[in-house]
Image (tube, rainbow, N blue to C red):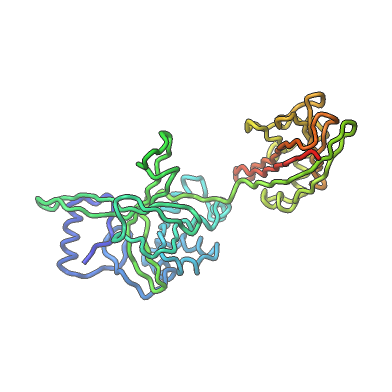
Length: 362
């Protein structure tokens, strides 16, 4: 008979006593978040098993599941590393999030799908002390391993193992050839493992102090356009490109009119910049407001002999006009011009929409 639940911080002597009592009685108690024994099989679905917890340790988790319509996913996952309400509330506290509505604004469904896997074999019995990698349902490669902890029973040293979910930061810690500045991986230990639900899920419960990863909504949108501009030695020839106002404004959580008004009125919360090759931002408008003249390397410059191209943005229509300085660029020359909308929303989150213009002189 195997013991599946361990509480960090319980002294080794008590662990030994509990284990010997369990073996002697060969009886499994109901699930308890502070340690104890749990039945490996349940007639309940994964969702219903979590909902039926007598201590209501998954109420917040299930509210998040319901919010993202993930009940079916929870039930169909091969393995689910379920975070407890304690861990979720700690995450909210660390990120100064006071309400669930505020939490929803700073996360996506990937907050939960990062803990779901197709494989139902991610158990303590199958784990090794070296990290094995798997791709979760959020499309992220993470690790699973077990760690050995020794404890003393009378005069004998025994060992128990704890299952770990490993959030890989860069490369797996200890990998050959890992860069010197590689960030340490985050370790999320389990307090319960190997519960088999009626829907076929292998349910592992993360410890209450597991450092959850807040996967928020994407903060960057990248749009790219290929533009041909007619080369001329005498005219300021140009080409218009229509930007998707609904896509840009929707990503920022604004209306197209709000974006236009912010740019025109010089809002400090939403600024339209040129993104230069050295990653610096410039809102020094050197062409028609709000627009930029660029040198041949893509840096903002003033109109004159060193100016090759310009890009003007028209906030009212979301039209972008790209033109050339007469005679400087040659047929076949290619240039990259970049702009970015930078918006700080009411939650203090910085959202950025990148516009990349791939310009060819024809």
